[in-house]
Amino acid sequence: MKRNRVHNFSAGPAQLPLEVLEEVRDELTNYKNIGSSIIEISHRDKTFVDLATESEAQLRKLLNLDDSYEIIFMQGGATLQFSLIPINFIKKKGKGSYAEVGSWSSKAIKEASKVCDVDICFTAKANNFTEIDKLDKWKIHDDSQLIHYCKNETIQGINIKQDPDFDLPVFVDMSSCLFSENINFSKYDFIYACAQKNFGASGLTLIIVKKELLSKANPDLPNILNIKSHSEANSMLNTPNTFSWYLAGKMFKWYLEQGGIIEMEKRALTKSKILYSLIDESSFYLNPVNKAQRSDNNVVFTIHDNSLEGKFLKEAEAAGLMYLKGHRSVGGMRASIYNSMEKSSVEELANFMKDFEQKNG
Ligand SMILES: Cc1ncc(COP(=O)(O)O)c(C=O)c1O
Image (cartoon, rainbow, N blue to C red; front, side, top):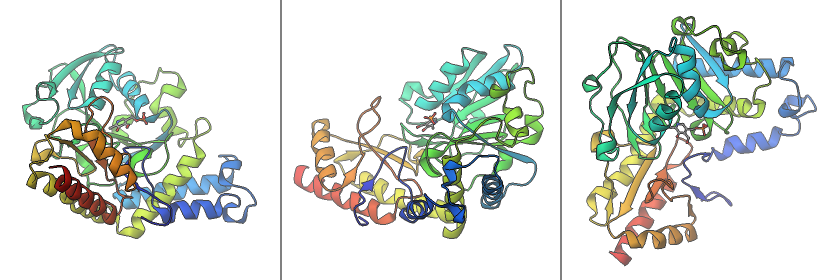
């Protein structure tokens, strides 16, 4: 534990690197000697516009994105995209193919169903979202105009590692895995992710979209609901979440300094392996997810004897291992170990788990 900080396993909003927070603290009242905080000036001011330009350049460098992709920052969380995607990209009450691979993709389906004809091309509901069929087994309807799914289901701790290969535009929620995986962007047409897991504070959503697709978006929507309008206004159609944007810029810089996405992916694999090996070697803990599809960011587990889970969480908290309770909809435990989490915190959790098993197993 660093100074007075706990080991923070929150699924989001999630912990940030201490050095980034300290930098923010140091410049909070006087950003770059302008005599104001970054959140006290206009987003149209040159200082903020420069910050926005620099953050986009750093993001492009970090993710190796060329000019064929548009980068957009929006508000409304990843949740807003559940509605915006169908109204922008499905024509006249047409059909969209949606895969149901966990709670977040279910939520997307529920919202899309209000504005388009949703065709469920695959559902993992029957196995309780513990195993997902290969993408070429999904049944895509002939009339479908797009495909949507969530790559990393934060609640169930399951991740689709396979890249898509469809003839239709592919829209993917990467809220809890972007920046932890080396994504082959050419395989995806529209990626979105909320900031509060891997790149800052809530209230900011990043969209990475192929320009060619964006040019086909529905032009008849009110501006604020029109994704293309946000892009044309350089994500400043109205006042953006300037603090979150600023923080995202700091995170992109931090990623570059740390060695970029390849390094993040390596670290994520190392950290998740510590926990999955422990779980698999024990007859005390259990992870139900198909081994090849386990999330490297959200490690879910239960105790065979469920009655011990309350005790586990209480004693974990007393040891400074915080926010390990699984999502209220599924119970159990969940360790979210995004990029900002140090390996030493994961090791601390692993030691605690071994110790708890020894005492209670
Ligand atoms: C995969 C995924 N999608 C969407 C969301 C919703 O994000 P927001 O609360 O920013 O709308 C979350 C939030 O936890 C998530 O994990």
